[in-house]
Image (cartoon, rainbow, N blue to C red; front, side, top):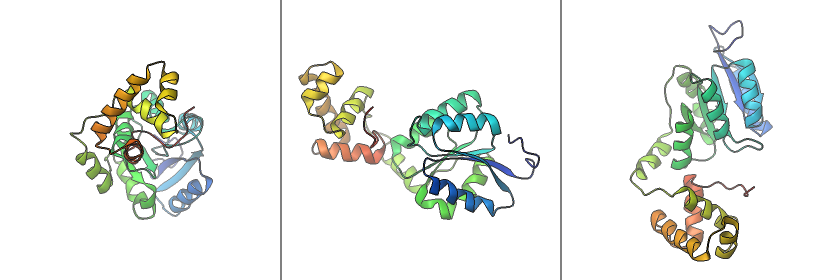
Length: 217
């Protein structure tokens, strides 16, 4: 897809991450590879969409948690416009739910930032060839929870507010439901996640990527 003059021999790459040091580290690794070239970088999802349209990269490296527009939303918008886009997620989170959301949005692979030094270059080449790539521990977690009951959208919404420190009464007020309804949702959440209490449920949900650690907006 890259429109640079040597696109036939090099993989044009867009790097998207809100941390400058991460972008610089990735650029440093790729800069030493004769078959790869950084076309552009972006610090949030909105910049990523614009940069993709401008540079048409062969492979996009996309963080998920970013300001203004998150990576998942950016992936959806880019793939909606360019179904052939090859987007490799770079993240610190190995949660099965977050991984599945990214793959369903159109990502072709998922790479943990802790594995970048060892696996990034081969992951980029795999993505360019159209191969899907998942770390073994991520694939194992997906398999482990494949048959679990999933939280509904409302249950995830309730749990996000629990994670923000809100009591049932406050959650009920925000959602416009009764406190008893919130208690009913919490009972279902605890059962589905096999959690001992509210705190345990939040920890499980954060680990699996059912909710994220950002404050509600």
